[in-house]
Image (cartoon, rainbow over the protein chains, first blue to last red):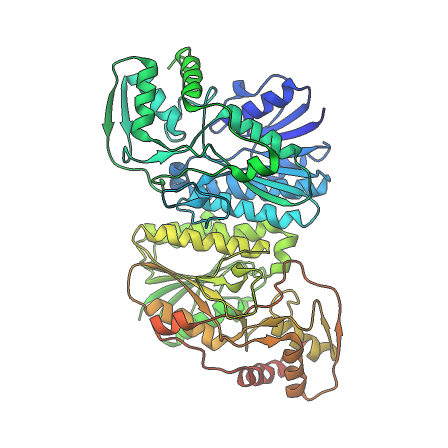
Amino acid sequence: MGTFLVTGAAGFIGSCLAHKLIKEKNEVVTIDNLSTGFKDAIPDGVIFYEGNCHDNSIIEKMEPYKFDAIFHVAGQSSGEISFEDPVYDLQSNTQSTLQLLKLALKIKCKKFIYASTMSVYGVQPDRPISEIDEVRPVSMYAVGKLASEHYLRIFQQYGLQTTSLRLFNVYGEGQNLLNLKQGMVSIYLAQALKNKHILVKGSPERYRDLIHIDDAVNAFIYAYNRDGNDDKIYNVSTREKTTVVCLIEKIINILNENISVEYSGSTPGDQFGIYGDFSKMKSELGWSPEVNLNEGLNRMINWAKGKKF
Amino acid sequence: MGTFLVTGAAGFIGSCLAHKLIKEKNEVVTIDNLSTGFKDAIPDGVIFYEGNCHDNSIIEKMEPYKFDAIFHVAGQSSGEISFEDPVYDLQSNTQSTLQLLKLALKIKCKKFIYASTMSVYGVQPDRPISEIDEVRPVSMYAVGKLASEHYLRIFQQYGLQTTSLRLFNVYGEGQNLLNLKQGMVSIYLAQALKNKHILVKGSPERYRDLIHIDDAVNAFIYAYNRDGNDDKIYNVSTREKTTVVCLIEKIINILNENISVEYSGSTPGDQFGIYGDFSKMKSELGWSPEVNLNEGLNRMINWAKGKKF
């Protein structure tokens, strides 16, 4: 049992991580500004502070807690929106990280786990990308996340164990079906359920490495349980390529309904395709993904069918 | 003749750049928060707005101008201070860049020249570093500057010509002799003049690539005059290594006074040594440094001797 700060517990990943920690009898505190998350998504028992992680006034309220770890999951998570309001993106994804790293040192919290992103890799060749590959962010979102990774590496020198998890495309039960700017699976699924029509912005041949939320949450727990006092970066991925056209086919098959598909335009800063090698996390921490795509999609779609639009 | 925004014209480099542009009959506007700069350093004729480049309220005041280029020179420039207040460093060096890039697009300014830094390279082997070498920032300051470079590259796609100048250690007449946290030459020279004693934080064998202010200012002009609509990164350096011990010897020789030297401690995030290959800027733009170190130091020391402490 421990005490944890999970930022963004009103959002998809933060909510699921907080839920798992609460279930295991830990004390969990969260900060969330509810800009895209939902208060209802914050699991029962979580101590909730409403506000921005980049604001001093909220960070100061965390000082009395003795956190065993800070999981920094909150942040503007849409590459698309990062172009519409890059300053907010920087505050929400990078300034917030600085504030929380400073907090960690101040309250002598020993572990800091950061939700980074595969977006930091940018445009890459068609092979599994590993953590030693060059980074070349092509969205504001990715620039801010990469800067945060650098901050973690620098703060590690002050006695903090730091871990950046480069999350690939996380999907699953609990994903926001109302936000049409974030989350490839949820965007297509929501359109299919609501409109019986899927509008794809960009090429059908684009591909992603889709990782189920349960595997992503496990990755945070594995990262927390790791030994050492160093800075680490891990891909959280499946090493499986899924093209847009294949994903949509699977969704339509599982739904077993008549759904039309339209391809049009593109999304700024979108990556053509990327999939990730997770052998580093497997060999060093023993983590590997356990939910395959068919199982994961079935679980998500069953969950989504019960939702109202 | 043109109209230019030079941010930070109360600071060392911004002031010298603005001076040169004014001398050539251009209209020059500046934004400066006077946090480390001096109002007196702003050249006569420059239109001055006091405030932070990361604040919307100041940026909005620039909208009526038709700038031929934005030279973004303002920013917190001390690696050491970036550790004391990393959030301000991020705002001042990175959020400001986003605000000014957005401004450039809005007012259809075509050219954006950014004062980046050799600090983005971090710890490097003992050979001339070129723009294709890997970056690995080790200070908060460098993280923020590197993020800005990425933002330039992304904004370039929207029709802006963008140039990041990775300035090595700029020194010379006009450098702030009162700020003991920024500028290796000015820190040692100021101590020598004021105390007849130089305290060096770090190893005497550290080395730097010292570039005279006139050469640095010229680099901005060459960058402005370049053709093309692309994003470029250039080292602004001399390819000459100068160790701390050698620099101090030169200063003492030129001063021709009895000055004691003490070595003690270190500066967080300081680089052991770095010097830069400038062949890219030379071959593509024709720029190369013209002021050698002995000449530059003589000029600076003559200037500094007339100052009061």
